[in-house]
Length: 131
Image (cartoon, rainbow, N blue to C red):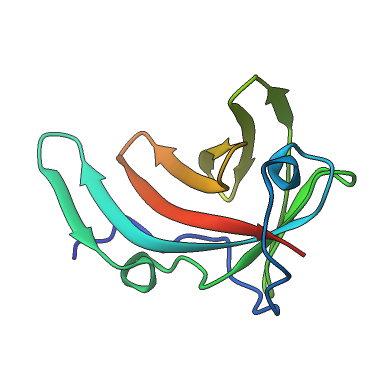
């Protein structure tokens, strides 16, 4: 898989909690999230499918909505913008020259994260569960 640069956000391995309910994903509780699929996209070159490790993505990351931060073992990334909608929460920030955004499904905890620069983008798909 081509790499424009390895993702700066690294993972934090945490124990998963009990069975999740819809209210668990409304931004009121911290979450642990695991990306499971990755796309590496370059302008004019299309996208290559792979696993998160191929692009340096973490195995796990933690979202602390109260402190507005996404936490991994090597980096923490501040959440600069957060918007709660009826069916999703949208998070945005920047880190190490990349803009990132996350869409979190408030019904089931599924997530999509994008990291982008002027050279291309990474797209990660995964799921979250409450801590």
